[in-house]
Image (cartoon, rainbow, N blue to C red; front, side):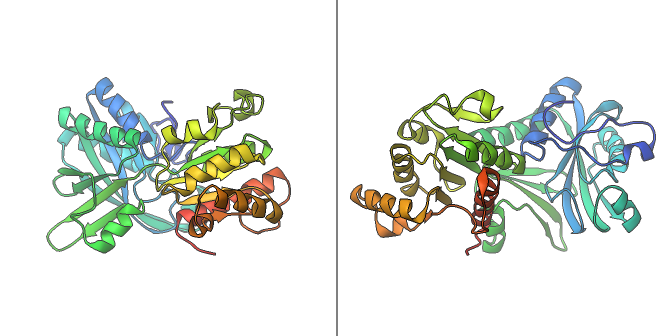
Amino acid sequence: MDDALPSAEATSGAADRCSAARFSRTAGAPDAAARIARRWLDQFGTIALATVIKTWGSSPVPVGGQLVIGPNERFEGAVSGGCVEAAVIAEAANVMASGRPKCLEFGVDDETAWRVGLPCGGRIEVFVERLQGEADKASLDAVLAARSERALLIVDTDLASGRRLLQRDTNSYPSDVAAQLESGESILLEDPERRRFVHVYVPEVHVILVGAGHIAQVLADLAARVGFLVTVVDPRTAYSSAERFNDIALRHEWPEQALPSLGLDARTAVVTLAHEARLDDETLLAALRSSCFYVGALGSRRTHAKRVERLVKAGLSEAEIARIDAPVGLQIGAQGPAEIAVSILGAIIRARHGIRS
């Protein structure tokens, strides 16, 4: 099937369609549905887009998860573990024909939940809308452009009419809603007058690993599976070869050459894994003077003490140096490349959610 979204082949029987979705490593990428929808609009002219707008209890697909539906029950994506897709696809045919958007609410009982891999039942609400014509193409183009530019974009949709408002910032929202949106969490706004789904697209978390050793191999793969954008930087091509890192992005440059073009923003984590002062120090100088949300450095406490001395001489302040997570990772007694990679990924995820030790 197209791109890397969870997918299944729609069949005539609802029971056949009610199976657990298959997830690839890049499944769940926030722009994946937009990419598919944009291509299908050109290909088919009229499609439907289903979006999870609310969940209660257990849900394998979070708020904002999307299912793209084309003609002849063709679909890509997921709004559940596979137990309600058939009903959504059937309703999508009506929405495509009428042009009227629709909100669907589903309850998943415990027996069905267990069958599709959920620990317990729950409820989800799904918004289904028709996409057709130049205005809808422009909206999808805006989503894809924002992702490419690593810029925030908000799609604020009136659920009764389907009208969308695209915004580049959170200034028009109350502070609590704005904070939620800036953290990357989409939200359903409800009042007596109307209901709106505010779907936020934030830049992907970008994990930059400097030093292409064994730990980097495992960590790059794990971080990509979580859904992070990953880049490995190492001028030593014997280490940073495509054979060792499969489809991970590689930069065969020194950090001071690669990092400026990668853009060290507030949704970037940088980890030095080289055990080589020439690589580590230049990386840390750049990362600590940026807005990166996480900076980690591999090495023992003794190694880090020597590193701190060099960074002080290079002009970094005590506060800047204190941002370094070293020895890197969660302190879980990790041994060997795989366990150390897990501890580092855990530290990145913790920092991403603003959790302090």
